[in-house]
Amino acid sequence: MKFNLNDFLELDTTALLAVNGGSDCGGGYSPPSNSSPSNGGPSTPHGGGGSGSVSGGGGSGGGYCSGASDGKTIYANTYYKGGGKNSISTNAGGGACGTIPGKNGLQAIPDTAEEKTEPAYANQRDFSPIYGDNFGNEACAATSLLNEISEQYTAETGKALTQEQITSAMDAAVASGNIDSTKAYVNSWEGAANDMASAVGLEGSFTYTYNPSEATATIYAVNTDSNEYGYAKHFVNGIGNGQYYDPWSGQTGNISDLEFATSGLGNTRDLVYTQR
Image 1 (cartoon, rainbow, N blue to C red):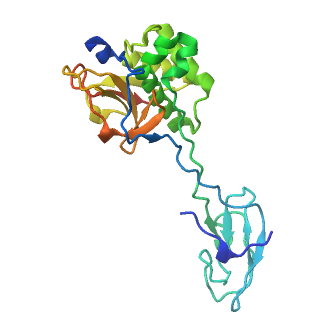
Image 2: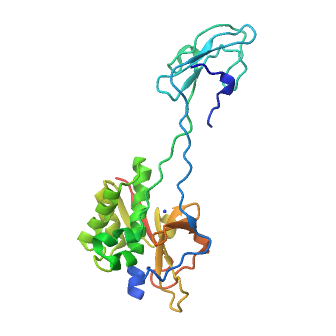
């Protein structure tokens, strides 16, 4: 297929309950009014077609450029005198583009735009069919934690968790007792995180930290009804860029709009992930 170099562009998520993660984070919760649906980030197209060539022109230049067989790279002929963005104008004429970088002075133009895989985010009531409605209605903390494990999984593997993996992760934390099987209390943040991580195949481990600045995974404790004691009533997880994912509504919102808990462990539950 013929193409012209001038058209080629280089693409340059009670007190005890609040502390441990069990809270009445069900139907009484309403997210901030400015929450918006959770849309994945935009996917950018892969570059490059297959092999092909185009005749060079202009002055005494000539020659042509070819797409590499990987379908992602185009090698620019340094002797091509067509004046395009990726051509180099010389007085020499002729010469064919190759498919091996560094050969004959050829300049490799890599595909710099890669499609980004977004993490899978679970919603707490997804677990109601397995553990019952009470579990699903109360599992905001457990699900927010699982969503942090999902983010780490995607960061390491470039893949999103499958529904089977999500279920296996929650099953592992419930089976160990680190998450209560009836009320969904998180009895151990660190223990539950490591149960989930192991279930999905992560080789690293999580450690609970009381220093939020060290955290690589952050769950936010929210005081949704401004109760005078300041305990957490709901949990959401940070997803970066100053935003959070709400496992009750399935929506994202701005962390700055949240009213945080002030009692118990405070406004965050923080973990550090260490790769082995």
